[in-house]
Length: 176
Image (tube, rainbow, N blue to C red; front, side, top):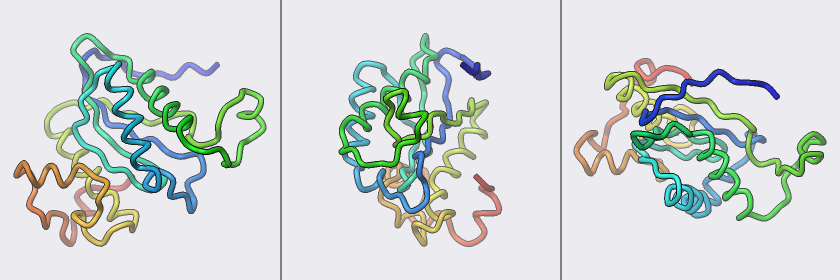
């Protein structure tokens, strides 16, 4: 088995990108948004974390999670979240032969991408990136138009104005 080099820092804050296995034309995450929310809540009840920001797109998601002070096990959380979601939806996805041999579903990419948040500036940049992502991918014309995002909570808290994300922001936020 491949050994991935991952930082393990107790109580850290992390940015994650998690993708469906089949991204093209797939809308599963927003079609089953309630199932995904339940998966997050079920896992959070047994393996606490704080969700600092999130954007759920049809075929991938971005979020920032903070773990408890003595905990550094984000991999278990993602495995459980993916597993809860997968078991709660009907079968029917295409499954590769390698996944079939292992008895796996074909919903999620096996891996995820993580980034350790270094400081407040890094946190702010990643929160902006998360909230801009639906516009970047063409799912919404304005950030406020996308319903599956923590942007709306940030507006309620006064962090962003409701019209945040005007022209030229993509140059600041950067690519995926």
